[in-house]
Length: 370
Image (cartoon, rainbow, N blue to C red; front, side, top):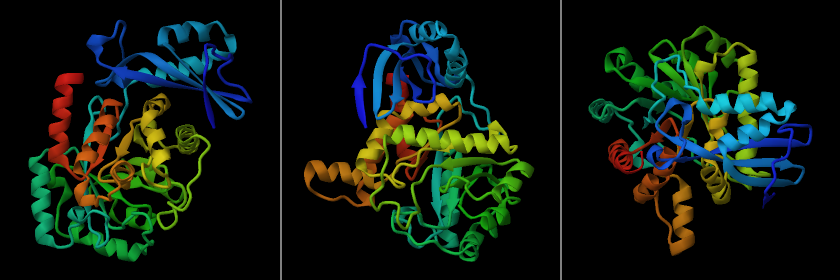
């Protein structure tokens, strides 16, 4: 789909053939003339990129957000859309489990799988698991995401029984309440989630985007948050020729539909977190499109989780430039670079294998850019 620079904004902002998307251009508060705080957080903006999708073209214009407000107010039929965009960009992100979304939360990856793509994230025996839990407590990690099914490209789905069996290594040996950590369960299976929901799980992280309607009853009756991730197809086939018109807009519309469905069925706004799903049914070009336009997702008004750690995208970028492949073990530097971009783009959760290194990196960024 073509992106065409333009000097004009089409009004009204929304119609049968036209959709308007607003992307804040984030920066340092002290370097902006009239800064607006993004989502009551640590990033600010005053200018925005306006994307308008009309048939087979996307029109792009950069302008001051206050100018955009004035322009939109001149059109009666744009007022409601404008108010929604403004509110979503400015409003505080709420959490039913007391996560602080005014900062970037770090989510550590803890895999109870024999086949995760990154060897160092696997913990298949109790002794190593205990050591890692103690390490994470000392690092004061915000969230621990525990999973027992690999979702690497080409991974085959396992049964819920097998997933539950693997997870018992953790749940049979640790009292989550005494660990003083917020626990996320990385599972797309209702049977697995319902088996452990009363064992201290505060977040369900579903790579399939909660398409299984059986989850609804659980979400309505438990004080749990959810991470809705976008994935095209399934892990087994997700990298077989993924296709999009314009990735960031396609995925934005996916979230808009999923959120609408969940809210209409009683799920609370404070329960919902979104994750664009880097690497899940996306090639290098698609992933870079998501990174370049990442702040668009803030205009949905929900906390955003980004998972870029050790991903094959890093290998794709390096290989194209240096004609040499790099394994997950060799992708730390690339991980930090991409996670820094997500941090500066206002992601409220970064899911990472490398807590200590990311803490260092973000601390340095805060001194210079925030």
